[in-house]
Length: 535
Length: 99
Image (cartoon, rainbow over all chains, first blue to last red; front, side, top):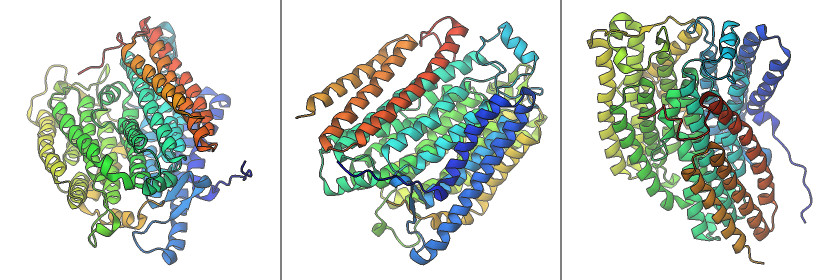
């Protein structure tokens, strides 16, 4: 039997993660002890403060690395720390993803806290446990109760998202997957309006999510059987030495890919995303569509580059097919949609395909030309750009309302551009960014992922991707024509003026979408400095 | 001692669970099938731990049990609210979101 070694945690490097997790636990205590009237303010401030402090900690860790890296590593090289006994990797890409996820979480919190749109109440149900339309619900709403538990749930989800791309061990990755998913399942069912839809969304998300994470776990079992360890480094080593049973490895790769591709909503594992996006409360849809994708693609990159990088020949063809399917199905099904949230959901499926184009553009370091951007950089840029755009677009969707709540039916969006030129204009701008029109971040992102895929020789996928981008432009133009060149119909929706919370979210995301499109260089420099994954 | 029978059993359990999720209608039964899948994973972890002679797999099994328990809490809460609203726990009845 081995001697027991006391495990060490690298508290300093893990501080962003620990701060968010501690704040989530603190949020539960606040829920128990602070009077109901003060909870909303207390929870909002606690959540925002912890996210901002965690972001500060990320910057601090990054500067700390930069000091030590300047002497030991060149630009683009991997640097970082294998924290928590090698099960969490804090390196350049991890820090970058942490920064992006925390920014998206701050924006998400501001949307969660918006109260003007519902006349002084948040978008979350007053009494989630009551039956829709029941007396209990009516009383709770009349008393203006709030479920302020949503903030700790958000923080738990964020801590899972931070751990997910940093995990360097299949068990930690599975735990992170569950920590990020379970709060989201609950939040999906907490909408104030249209509660039956919301509960149905929660159930569908839960069952399909649990089903797919079981697949991921069985993949982890088989990988453990193959390599004798759950660590990414050990699995990579076993593949390099070709020690184990090849059949076990292939089954493991397939099963783990199912679990992770489900989370990013890539076809053919996308069936949940339109339903969940449509049924969930819109602030949650905004946050989830952006942050979950960022975290899950980070995890995919780490698993497939670090642990399975030497087995590239077996998984790359699968990713080719999944990328093509996602782009084609996402784009074609988006054409037929008449609900704006479903349309954005299918477009997010297509975007998952575009990111996968970047993922399969991975090459060995020696094969890359000088000055060429690496697959990781391109994917991270695309994720940042798409995350901000998607969050902003859903924030705008939340503003278009009538007396009965949000109006998602696109036919009732007719003439919105004449009535509220500013809101319609911002939404059109987000759609242009999703379509990848120049001067938006979407264009740079698409250019980056296409060029890495081309450099890696995946030209058939790039051809499909470009074709689908062209088709996608038509979808977005259709919405713009509807907003600007149609007369308002009977029962057309109007724009409710939000408070400064939502306005600032929309302003920040729109500004960043523009800035990343016009001057993308600072972000690319940051990504070049972030370097590669450590092993 | 060969671990093959245990791995085969774990694969059979996993398959039973997966087929159950896809074919059964009652939300509780679907949920039980997910749990069977997770327990099949546990069996696999423990069997491989025996083969490799290290403890990683056994520790993983403990973590999976905790995750499964957490999933029960969240899952039953969601099924309960659905049942209260619809008086039915059939996964086919909840079909407002489509197309």
